[in-house]
Image (cartoon, rainbow, N blue to C red; front, side):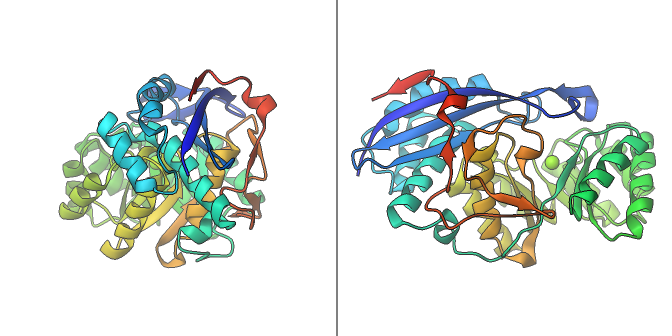
Length: 368
Ligand code: MG
């Protein structure tokens, strides 16, 4: 089997509701998504989506993904998509790092593999370890009352796990998260306080001191692995790393420095399903828990995320985030089924999705 044609689609997806706010005054209003299709000489087509969490979340932005495709697509034409690691080798030879762009091609290779096997991707990723992985909310920063209202809305949809954003000012963040914890105490939901690298170490220590009696995990507090390790060592509080872990060597370094108790896996940031699965399995062996997410997108990204989430053992699994909570547009039929705060994939082969060509429009680039 050979990859014979690659089409690249660009889709701007409005964020539902208010603009999304991260620490440090960062705001974004749309997902800048890139979708690729890989066609093969056997007539099987695979799909993948790569979409950053706005241009200010991590080292990725939509136009960068599409520029990288000009290098990556010619490098993988003619290769066998069933040999995903060899496809990855070719991408690595053509372009250093840039996993967020390689992700779309890698996911499409896995979609093809599932379709050829006639099995859902969850089976190729190890099989269903959970019947209905729980979803975790994503709560934009705001006043305590605003954030509690959003959490209450998610609770009404069955969510029992939440990731709420810190704003950056440690005193205000203590006020926010004490209020959230007081509300949460009677309910027993799982809670993450996500600073998105927004604190210097002294600020993170002040926050940690203020919420030390609360039941929550501190997510990505500082910019560096050393700062996060220091925070964890001096407070004894559980720390999850997110943006800082992009590639396998980042995870190995975090483990070496004892910088975290958990990793938030984002498929696009890790470079696709091939690398996200490796990171998930290394975390399991290293005694780290994981969330399974992607950085954005719509139904195609949600499908890849849900297949990986459902193949992740409950013991280490903390929650899956469905980007369709924010996506104002659907880009495929047959995406994972979300209900009662959980998500599950169907038995349809591959990702199980049928992209909506009328929504994707004409490809912005074709390689053949
Ligand atoms: Mg995060």
